Image 1 (cartoon, protein in one colour):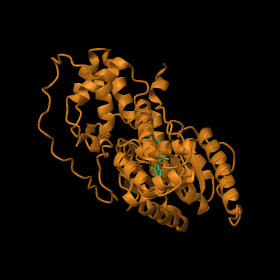
Image 2 (cartoon, rainbow, N blue to C red; image 1 turned 90 degrees about the vertical axis):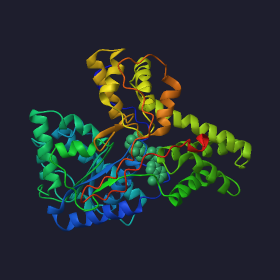
Image 3 (cartoon, helix red, strand yellow; image 1 turned 120 degrees about the vertical axis):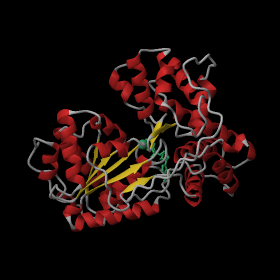
Image 4 (tube, helix red, strand yellow; image 1 turned 90 degrees about the horizontal axis):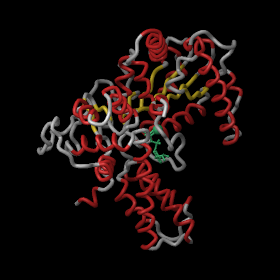
Length: 418
Ligand SMILES: Nc1ncnc2c1ncn2[C@@H]1O[C@H](COP(=O)(O)OP(=O)(O)OP(=O)(O)O)[C@@H](O)[C@H]1O
Ligand SMILES: [Mg+2]
C-alpha cells in the first residue's frame, strides 16, 4: 500500500443525506451569513463545522451548498490536498457550478439560471489559487470536506504553507473583492489547523461543533426511512423507539440502523413484526461495524492490536497519551511507522483531538477495537491502568464560538451495558 493510500480514509458516506432533518439553527445562521456576504463582499468569511466521525458533517455541508445555490452563489467543492493547485481550483469552480445549476433547474423551474453566470471564473487559468478566486465575479461558496487534512499544510513549511495561509486569510477577512465563503467541515483537529494557517477568530455563529440530532429530528429521520424507503405498513412508533435505543441521535448510527430496517422491510413484505425488528436491528449492527472497519482501514492487524491495548489501558472517556500509543506500536514496527499509524488513526477519526488531548471519540468503536483486537500481554513500558474516572472534559468556551457543546459521542450500546 502506498503512502497516499494510507493517508486517504475510506469514506463511504459522503455528501447528501437521503432524509435530512434537524440542524435548523445552524442552517439559519449560515443563511444569514450568506445574506451578509451578498450585501458586502468584505463580509466574506470562513464557516467551520467540526465534529467527530459520523456526526453529519458532510450531510450538513451539502445542505449549506444547497442553500447557497438557491441564494444564487456559485458553489464549488474543493479537495483539501488540491486547494493550492490553481488549475484544479479553476476546474472545480467551473464543473461544480454546472452541476449545481443542473440540480437547481431540475428541481425548480422558477429559478433564474442567469444569476449564476456571475459566478463563473473568467480569463482562463490564473497563476495562484487566490488569483483564480479574485478573477471571478459574484458570490462564491467553496466547500472543503475532510478539512482536517489541511493539517498537512499547517504543519508544513515553505511555499505550500505560505500559499494556504494567504488564501485562507484573504477569504476569511473578505479581501478577495467578491463575496466568498469557505465552508469547511472536518474532524476535531480542523480548528487547530486553521488556527495555524492564520484563521482563528470566527464571526458570530460561524464556528459550529456538531452534537447528536435532537430526538424530534432523529424520529423524523427514522420515520422517513421506514415509511418512504421501507414503505412500512402500520404504526412505525415501536420500531422508531427501538432504533432510537441504538442510535441516540448519532447520524451515522441512525443511517446504519434505519436504512437496514428499511431495506429489510422492503425485502420481506412491509409488515412490521417483532421478529423482523430483531433481524433489522442485527442488520443495523452489521452496518455499524462496517463503519468502524472503514475507520480502521489501512491499519494492519498487529497495529490494531496495539491500538486496542492502548485504548484498554484508559477509561472509555479518558484521554489517550500519544507517547504510550507510540511505545505500544514500537513493539511491532519502526518508530517512523508508529508515527505514521498514529497519524492515520487520527486522520481517520479512530482518535480525535479535543482541545489539547487525544480521545477515542466513539465509545462503541473503542469497544469494537477491544473486543476484536485486544490481546493481553505484559506491558512493561506502560503506565499502570487508570482505575479512577477522569474529570469531565470541560466545554469549549472560546469567545465568539457558537459552541453546541463538546458532546461525547453517545454510546450506542449503552442499553446493553446497563
Ligand atoms: N441531519 C441528518 N439527517 C439525516 N441523516 C443524516 C443527517 N446528518 C447525517 N446524516 C446521515 O448520517 C450518516 C453520516 O453522516 P455524514 O457522512 O455526513 O457524517 P460525517 O460527520 O461527514 O462523517 P465522517 O467523519 O465519516 O466523514 C450519513 O449516512 C448521512 O446521510
Ligand atoms: Mg464526512
